[in-house]
Length: 325
Image 1 (tube, rainbow, N blue to C red):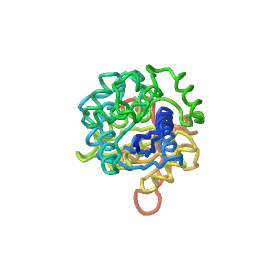
Image 2: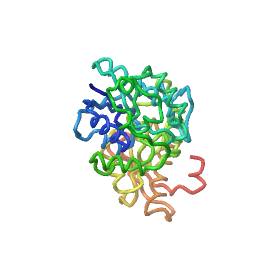
Image 3: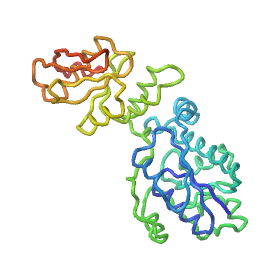
Image 4: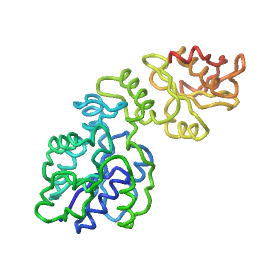
């Protein structure tokens, strides 16, 4: 009596796992890191818990197979939610077969989202993932067709949930009854693809990347800073605060950067293959978003474009210059 559950770091998945364990099943967890999981959700999915969770990276194939060409389309931004669920559950099905596990479960709730959790979407996902009769959604089970485990009496269907819609009151009741702590990660979508600003950055990156996709560091950089397209071959990323200045320096030290010479302004990374015009544009951005915004010009230190350090004097970027980039 072993069950494999998809663990995204969200509250519903935790409740689903607790319900399956309370029914007497041994639970194995699977977290598939597709490269766009929110930081707080990723941290929550990886924390120690009362059952093992295997973490697998699937970023490259997820980008190629799901994000770039979703068969079932996107949601409100660039979120291919139906294709994402099918992708995840196919891999869960393969692992379940490998481990001799007969039941797969998720924390999905009927009607909680408009795209992937409508009844017809849940049925399509189950069929296309190859898990017909073996996919349990414990929180909404009594609104859905019984799985083989329920039909055979291995799980008492009457002890499963009957949750529908976007409210969280019933989840809170179930969570308290199961002795679970309050949710650690904030609510909302589990991945960044549902964020329209992030989606715009990703579309821009894909439009200026080779067919086999951008390198992983470029995808990671989409989470930080303000992004400005300087040319087809170059982009500037401007830190928004001191913490981002630190992160950009530490995590992307291999990229060229610039900053006001006196340090009174953000770090600006240069991604791609910047020419002299792009470097000057990046220097202008470093002044625009710092203490020199109102100055006619100021010196900017350039690092990483050749031996030693460079220095140029630039004028802050104007509002008119920002709009097209």
